[in-house]
Image (cartoon, rainbow, N blue to C red; front, side, top):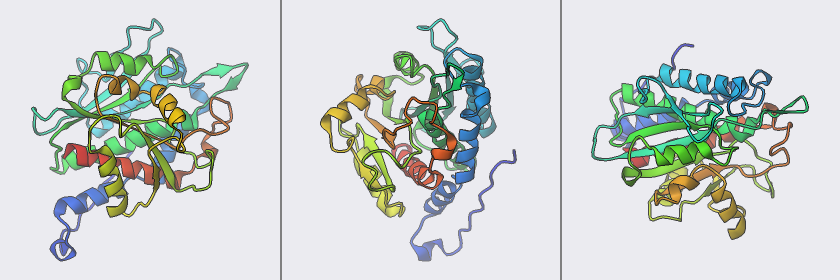
Length: 315
């Protein structure tokens, strides 16, 4: 597929009060399109992948798809020329898919952006497609990777490196993220933050009184500017999402869901984390979690929010 090309018009930027980098960032955020998010979700949540269960042909096909995207974007393959990190705690061929965008300052460390790509497979001839859980999160991660790789090629290289990870085996006790956290590319002591995306595409999660929202859990657990940055870009970039830093105001739900998604293995080691999600819904872990039930307009806005926040952490 032809690479996206973003034309930047710099004339008048001073009068508008914008730097060239501000304009470039806005244009690359605008390159995160609903149709491209949908395309990724439709591939990953298709019946042909049979629910992407870890160690199955469908799971390997999903991993191959992510790796092909990383290669097309020009990310570095960090494992002897491949993007695959075997998860040796599982015998079934589990593998994380990892792409690296190198920063300009080797001493500045890295930021991780991850989303798990596995799901529950098939039961009694029903395919558990996992469109929201978590094809939506992988789609968001891929679109952010493509946009930032495009900026890198335009000469705007982040100071910190960015490590993009599609985790395998989240549905097997988060084995993929546990393995990466124990065997990181950049030592966790030099990892400035971990961004995790897990179920980002629905608007009907309880209490469903506002569809223009996102949950951003864990940002207050370690000292970091993640919450302040998220709030700031939400306003300055005119996204105006209703951001809830808990699970619906419940400390019990917030702690429970913090512990059962992939950022947990970073947070427990002291890495600042933020976990973006649209929350629970009636199709969670059921065959009804299909592409048609996702809201791509709000998925686009949520993805752009993460893109802007991530850039502030790495620039």
